[in-house]
Length: 157
Image (cartoon, rainbow, N blue to C red; front, side, top):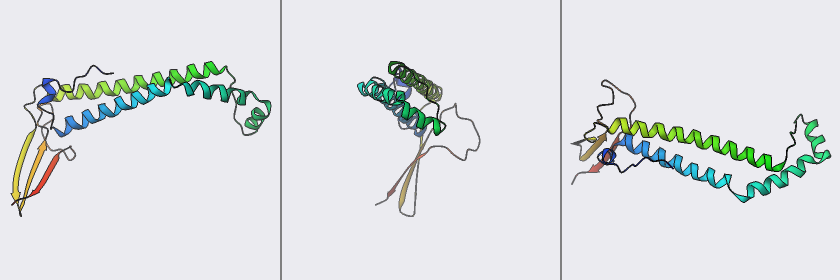
């Protein structure tokens, strides 16, 4: 689990910022995925499946059939298969941690000197349109053609 605190004072003021919301959503998605991987790695069915697959791979007829199909079978103990599966899960967890850290760093950089998102409101043709966008000084000046913005459209009364 990450040590990042999304309700920290730096983030709290930027909670409605579309970029920060996107980053926090990605962190939550990665955290949920990490939990699924942890659950899979320690699922008793992993050992059961390895115990079923190993004898099948050991059977000469099955190995011969696989060989005819051009598939080389590396016979190892089923416990080794479980260890290797868990090692690959661990490597993937590390990869997710790096991605989470990158998102957290992005949030920290954007919020460090930000005075909250910019909200603009205008009325035209019977509608009130409110746009919310990131106004962090960390964002570059100049034209951008793609950036998350929240837009709320309401009929005026």
